[in-house]
Image (cartoon, one colour):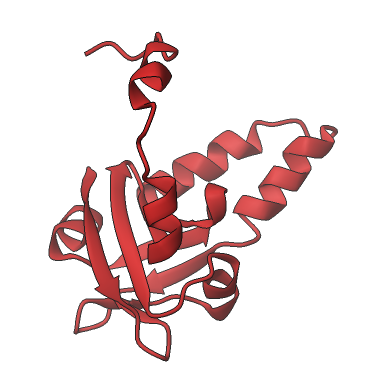
Length: 141
């Protein structure tokens, strides 16, 4: 399971250190793809296989399903962790998520999200979170 928030710096080549806790949970290879809200989603190979299988059950005659499949699966890339604990984020994904030097990695259970630091600061403004939580009846703590 992935959890926590980590501020990191990406180098000029697009290499990013994966926090040790994330490497322990995910191994030495991750699938990185375009996420929602202009961030990147990072999955383990096992979870990615499950995501792809779920998408595969959607009808090919459904235009929205085809578009989402192209977005999520077509935009994905395999990223291996190097000896320094880094992954190389492909250029197209760095461009999509507006990743430059300062990034934030956020563990959200079964995936990690990679954010441009400024975008994360805006997205993580939790004003009104109580009202949001009240509307999510399926959350039972």
